[in-house]
Amino acid sequence: MNKIGILTRDCAGINAAIRAVVRTACHYNIEVLGVRRGYEGLINGEIVNLNRLSVSGIISLGGTILKTVRSKKFLTEIGQKQAVKTIKKNNIEGLIVVGGNGSMRGVHILASKYNIPTIGIPATIDNDICGVDLAIGSDTAVNVAIDALDKIRDTATSLERIFVVEVMGRDCGYIALQVALAGGCEEVLIPEKNFDAKKMCEEISEGNAKGKISWIVIVAEGKAKANDIAETIVEKTGLETRVVVLGYIQRGGSPTAIDRILAARLGSYAVEVLRRGETDKCVCLKDNRLDTVPLEIAIQPKELEIEPYYRLIKILT
Ligand code: F6P
Image 1: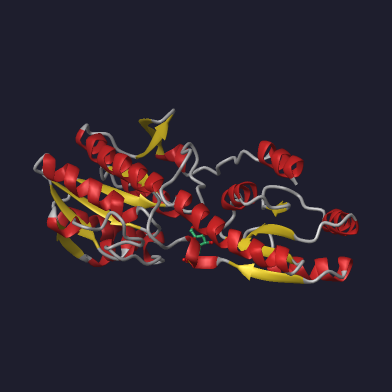
Image 2: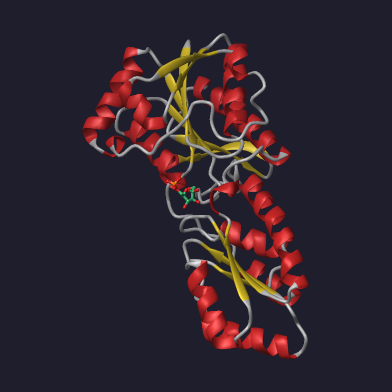
């Protein structure tokens, strides 16, 4: 193998993965082409050369040095054929795609429909890739949210207020569950579980009558709008309630050590796997050992471990 390509989405730890891919490829004298602006750049032929120097000093940077956009064109057959043309024209013998489940669907299309040797590296704050315990970026996102939450709690307890905090995660409650447990929160609302607003408000009122002065409710963005939940709480309990929507701060920032190490291991392994001639797979850790998941499994909906978290949150409230 003489030349590979890499394209990415955006979250903390992606630059660390790019670095690992480039440095491992250099070790094997493999040339690396970076695709700018994700699948859109692949369609348009936006290619740059990457070498040891171009990835120097990026391990601690959030975002992606390659830039990225969501590509509607890649969802069409015309777009996909143009992308394949770019791959062939540039003599790219294998492609590595770093991103979430949308990106992994793209990997699967390139590998299975167009026979392009392609390997995925899971990187998404949502941590919703099936068969992958931990995707790059989600540890940083949870830590960013916890940092914010610890500050919010200061005001919640000082001013005897209820806070409803909305976290990201698209259709997945992963971030919300982690944050609720690690942040010592009293309630968590996620897409995967039914929610009884009346019961929650009764619990808040009962707790308040017994002297509990503050309450933090975590809402996953895929479940409800924090503003709507706050309105219901005010209406049913009469207690002072504030809303915080954490949003994109969870996706940015310098990656945690866990994300950097994960990105380094997975990035390097993706090159090894491509060199072995494997394709249509996503690299991951299983029992903390490097492994792969077939893409047709990785793109299925992921089942989240919910009940042990819920039980703990409730017991510890
Ligand atoms: O998939 C990662 C994610 O940050 C989700 O948590 C969020 O719902 C979505 O992307 C936001 O997408 P966009 O960047 O297109 O606004």
